[in-house]
Length: 242
Ligand SMILES: [Zn+2]
Image 1 (tube, helix red, strand yellow):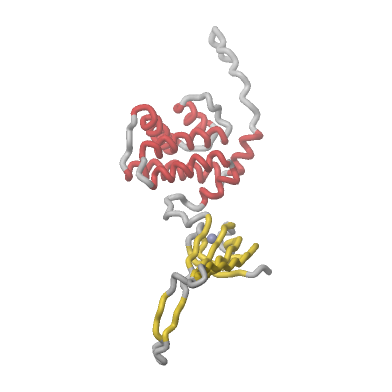
Image 2: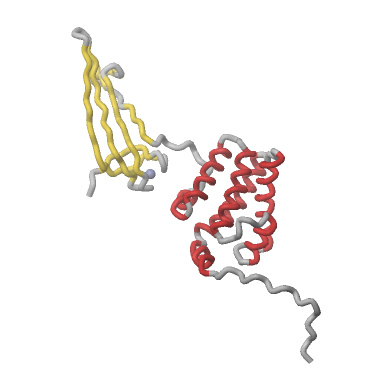
C-alpha cells in the first residue's frame, strides 16, 4: 500500500485521500549576515484515490509569512506559518462538462478535444464558437459511426436513421443542432444561453447513447460490409408475376 495524504484534487475538486508516488522536501534559507529568511517546499507527485487523476502538489511556507495568535489559556504568543498549496493542473473551474465526457478521450481523442473546446467556449459565453463546436462534434461522431464524411448534413442524419442509430424525433432534433452550427459558422448566428443548452443537451444524449454506452454499436458498425453500389433502375417496369 502506498502512503497517502489529504489534498485538494484538481479534477474532482474536493478534499481527497491521494497516493504519494514521489516526494521531495526542499528547505531553503537566505541571509545577508544580519537578517535571514527561511522556508520549505514540499513537492509531491500525487494520485487521487477517487478519480485517479495524477497531479503535482506543492505545499510551501516561509518565515516571512506568519500569523500570530495568543493561547486562549496561557496567553502565550503562538506563531504559525500557514502553508500555501499549489497544484498542477490547477483545479478546473466549475464545468458544464458531464463526467462521462472524460471517458470519450479513451474512445476518440479527437472527439474529446472538440467537445472540450466546445464546453470551454460555452462556459465563457462564446455561443457562436460553441455552436460551431457542436456541429464539428456531430460530424466527428458520425464519422466514428462509419457515416461517409462526404455526405451533406441532411444525408448524414438520414444515414443515421437508416442505420438505426437514431429515431424519427432525434433525426429532427439533431438536424437542428447541425443546422445551428452551420448558421453560426456561415452567418454568425448566435443562440442565447437557453437555446444553446437545448442544442447541447440534444447532442449530449446522442453522443452518450451512440458513442459512450453504444460502444457495441460502434463495434457492429465496423463489421457491417460496405454497401454495394445500387443497381441501375431498369428502364422498363418489371412485369408482375402471373
Ligand atoms: Zn480526484
